[in-house]
Length: 353
Image (cartoon, rainbow, N blue to C red; front, side, top):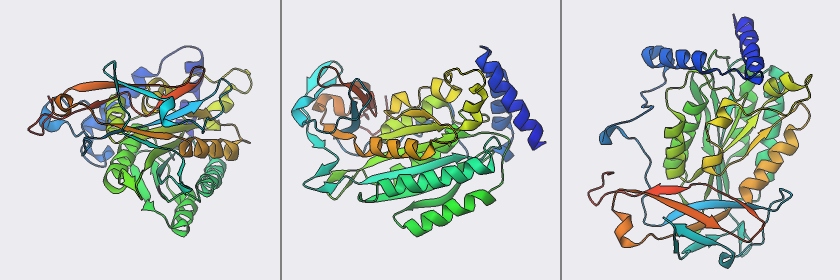
């Protein structure tokens, strides 16, 4: 059955390349997941409608933080910008930047909190799982000088935490070693996994540490074809924005090698199209069988190079219960990626409008 499922999934990839959509099977599997309790780890609400049902992580301070990554026209990271190089606009009105953290402050590296979420849905080969484990080790080593905590999750039919947030590299290595013994599933609950990862970061990784703002990120390793999720992409994006968490996606060779014979550039996967990466200030990369190490090192560099910017909204906006937009401008010629495009304030009574 597993082989048949993998063959079906590969055929779906070919259909996508020919311009056909996967909405029908995805919607069918999603509907099954919502009606069959055995497919769910815990209750979720994909599209909350009532105020008390909106399980959104809120900022607990008046300071609104966001991360910004700057790259030059060749895609290279720009690390030498100063506070005065940026302008911040709330609802189109310029606001003063209250806090500005760079990769290192007086020689002290910025703290980071990372959750790895790896797809074990059956489309990932054992060899790929092994290469991913090595690449994640390389990623963590790349950030060794930073005060860092890492966690590891797997997802397929269910989302499972293999290792909660820890600074102990031995525990993390043991979790990587256990990946090869984890069972495969026949669904790909990618959004559910990111949702759980964001919740973990919001609850167990403080926004500030050692007088610096913590960089929170989720690194998803998958074939890019979510199937069976209970939580919606928009809800995950909203929660990630509220928790100031960026999502990075590594799309594995199980998808990209489908294109090898056609020599085509990879088309966006459904995970790309959802806007999960773009709207959280992350980065999406496509792997091949030989470049996992460099890709993960590049993502680690991207995570470390983010500028942490914070501002205080005017008093009338802090408790009005409305959604406010945020836009960052930098030096001409640079491309900026920001971890959120806005924030949701609370009403004075603690409820959202």
